[in-house]
Each structure stands twice: as structure tokens, then as C-alpha cells.
Length: 256
Image (cartoon, rainbow, N blue to C red; front, side, top):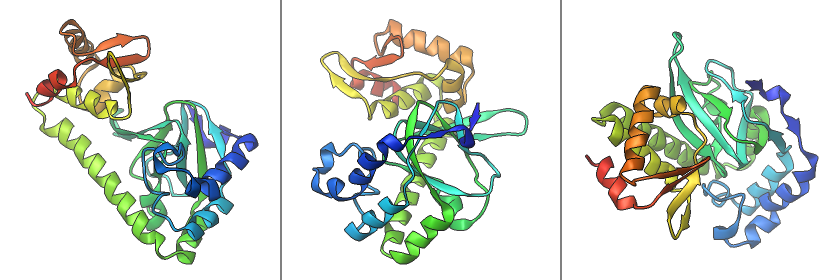
């Protein structure tokens, strides 16, 4: 597991990212803007705020396993995900872990701690190789002072984060069975998948133990439940790709 200091800046992407954050981002249709896919945080910033934010960026490439920030760590940066995925989790003193969700392109991480100045309540770990813009907390707070209208955008983003986290906790704490929890989790992940003639397909690289940490189940239970799903043709797994042939059938499991 790597720390953030081991990530290597990638100057080759600087000009393209700056363009995406600035003029080009405003000229491209929202539906095809790769930087903004998955969140409309940037879409809701004013043109002046976008240009100012672009001046703060130092894009970097992060390998899988890099820790952006950890629980009880004082805030130093906020992180704008351009490409890749980040695993957000909470850990107990006895080694137990609950994976809250997977953050994706377009999301901003570390907002709560950056605004409050309090230590982080979660750990953020790079799941797949990612391009991310870290913005120093001091610079980000200065950006908000210069653009008060951005506070509303940040507040809305925080509300979205809270809703997503509550949804995950509801799934873990209130769902009655492991199959129900796993079905809901897979349906949630598939929202960012690719529609094909065989169903919805998405990357599926978490280990069975990590999936168990998402739903509060053991590795053995996850393995057994996935085997049942495959036998009933609710899912198809090929390498690191999972396909849901029939969403309605899996949704029936999620409502069981």
C-alpha cells in the first residue's frame, strides 16, 4: 500500500486537463465531457470559478493502492478525480473494515475535512490507476473566498456524498440477507456500466473479501452468493468484467 507522497506528477496531462477545466469544458456538450462525467460539480461552477480552479491544478497520476488520506489525519488537500476510481472506507481498531462506496471520475474528495478543519473520518485508497488533481486546502479555501457562489455547489456536493453514504449504510444495516445486499450493490455499480446486447457490463476487480467489506458479509458468503447468482444467470463473470443479463431479475432479488 502506497502513500500519496509516492504518487508521480504527470506533466503530460496538464494542458489537456487545464483545457477541460477551462474553455474547452464549457464549449463541449455535457454528455460527452470526460472530465465531468459522473458528477456535475464542475458543471455548476461559474466560468470565472472554472478558470480560477484551473490555475490551481497540479494533475498527478496515482497507482493502485496509494492512500490519498486516512482516518484521523488532518486535512491537507481536496482531490478532484479526473479518471479512475477511489475506494472509501472506515476501519475499526480491531482490523474490521467497511467499504462505504467507490468514488469515480468527476467527484471531489476531502471536502468535509477541508471545510471543517477536523481530521478525516474515512480512508481514501486508489482502486485503479487514476489521474487526480490535488488542491491544497489553503488554496481551495481561498478559491471559495474569491467565489462565494461556489459554496452552494460545494454544499450540494456534500449532500450528495451524505446521501450515497446513507444508502450504503442502509443496505448494510437494514437489508435482511446477503443475497439482497449483494444484488443491491451490483445494481448500484452497474449504473456506471456499459450497455451491451448481452446486458449491462462493468469492471469488477474487488476481491470477494473486499465485496464482503462492502455489505458486511464474510468472504465465504460472498463466494457462495455469487455462485448462486451465476447458476441462476443473474450475472455472468469473465475475468475482471461482470455482466448483468437481466436487471429486472436481479432487482427482484434486491427487493426480496
